[in-house]
Length: 219
Figure 1 (spheres, rainbow, N blue to C red):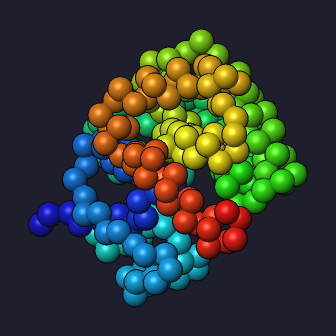
Figure 2 (cartoon, rainbow, N blue to C red):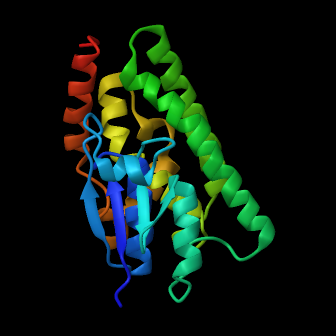
């Protein structure tokens, strides 16, 4: 009996992108089910009744939520392919720390760039650059955060890069000028089919965010 593997997702979600990349890295076939977050489907509400958010990974009828948890689940279930998390306990703890940092710090500050204007937006820009500089230090001279291969932190962070053009255009600043190592890392990641095929067109994301800003009366 074939395995049932589904992903409930919304195309511009950087959190959903993580799961798409993880599945591509593992070579796992799945059914992609696009969600309209303004009109949530009964399936989404059934599979994630607590948060009612995407992504939701459904494996043989059982839902798993929260992107970082989904990635760890995928790594545990499909062990035969290259690992996504380090095997060393300390390195695994470090990777989990930085993914949590990205989720709690970077995501919140990036929202200030496209969900506000004036001083709050300026604060968001400064914080995003400061956070990316911290992350650059973690990367160091390695090709990827995972070393020579794409790893947990890489997968957690790279989805944000499809929003970089929007942050820069709306906020009128340059991430490449401030964080050249991060942008070089982005270009390396995009050379991988698992990444490039899982990320949306940055221009499409930008037009999506322009509509969000218009609806909020910011433009």
